[in-house]
Each structure stands twice: as C-alpha cells, then as structure tokens.
Image (cartoon, rainbow, N blue to C red; front, side, top):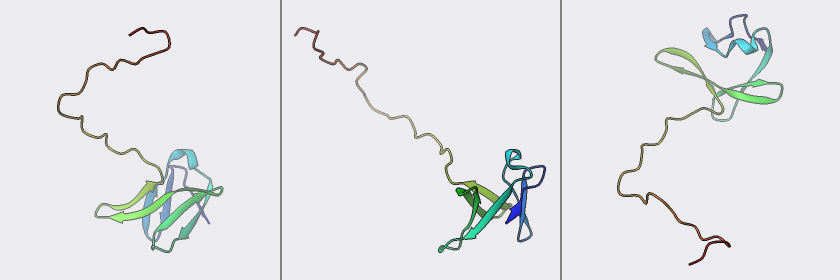
Length: 89
C-alpha cells in the first residue's frame, strides 16, 4: 500500500512515477504479476503498470490512446448507395 503525493507522484524502488493529480492523497496498491510487471491498483481497478526505461520511471495506463492508423491509399468509393424499403430501382 502506497500513498500518492500531493503533486500526483508515486515513489517506488527509488523512482518517481507521475500517476496524476486526481489521485493526490489516495492510497493505491502495488502487485507484482507473473510476468514481473508491477501493477498499480486503486479500489480494485487495475490502473496500469509501472515501467522503467532510459528516461526513468514511467506509469503506463492499462488503456491508452495509440497513434491513429495511416490514411488508406488507393481509390476508395466516394459514396455508397444503400437500398431501403422506400427506394425504387
């Protein structure tokens, strides 16, 4: 059990992770999973994993936005006509 600082940071194993100001003062739980990742939990919700890279500690949310896929190339149909019950052939 750890407590998030007033600035939204969590200190763990000599590293500081920014979790978010919304969690300031809240108690969170840490769990080491079978793959060796440290999971961060709040009220039975898996918030994400604590990871380390060249820049130091990082908090990676369980759900995050990925870069959008590149726009398709080629000739795509500009309009699609749908037949409805009211439309006549």
